[in-house]
Image 1 (cartoon, rainbow, N blue to C red):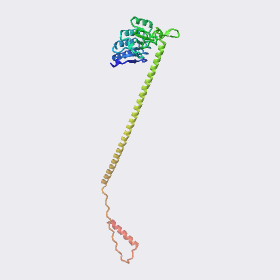
Image 2 (image 1 turned 90 degrees about the vertical axis):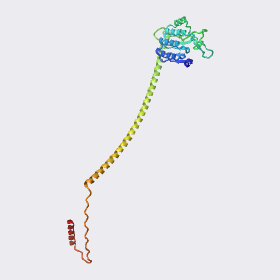
Image 3 (image 1 turned 180 degrees about the horizontal axis):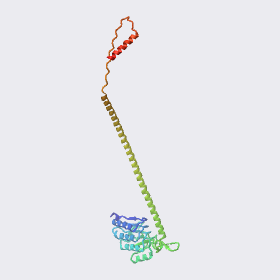
Length: 319
């Protein structure tokens, strides 16, 4: 219900849309019953199949409001596709022509569908307009831009379609004097259309390059951030490993020192057991007390004293 009440402008111009893409887009809009008041699909690659998808959209989206404007210039739409689109609009009366409020305000009134098809592959615009009117599709070419516009028409009886910039007034002459533009019958291609499409392609390539560069910068930023995080994690891991290694080395050295001290003590104890306790020295014999000489006794001669000492030493050895 919300989509039905909206007044949407769907703009997918300058997107290189193919017929299949246009069909998918319109199918989604029809499923949700979106009121597409203005459909801008100019400067794409739409041909007869894409216009057929638009006709299906007009028929299927019956609960939503009418499409008031079709901007389909700079595509590949031919005479048959254009005639089929106008026929489809004619079968949807009284929904078409749509009821629309003037741009400056005022009372709403019926206004022709604004259909812009310049720069396409329409060969004979006069014959196309004549065939449409024979089938009951009234057309206004909106040549008087002051009197006719997207929300107004100069005719007293409201036509079904405004074919803006359609017919001889939209043709321009090439240097050789021949008409050029989207409405000419030759298959050589329109010089202006080709230039416009080339400009569109250049703009599209430029947008693609910008998008690729942006994505590349984002990927590089992500890789740089991941690398910095990995470097920080690696540095922290190395510091932790170094601390663990230092602690293990300190513990190992302590154990080795303790083990060496224990081994040295055990070795000393083993040697002490093998050698046994040290032998005790025999006590020295007591010195004989020399008899005191009476006062006035003369000293012995040195020779006698030496002889007596020698004899005493021999006796100690025998003992």
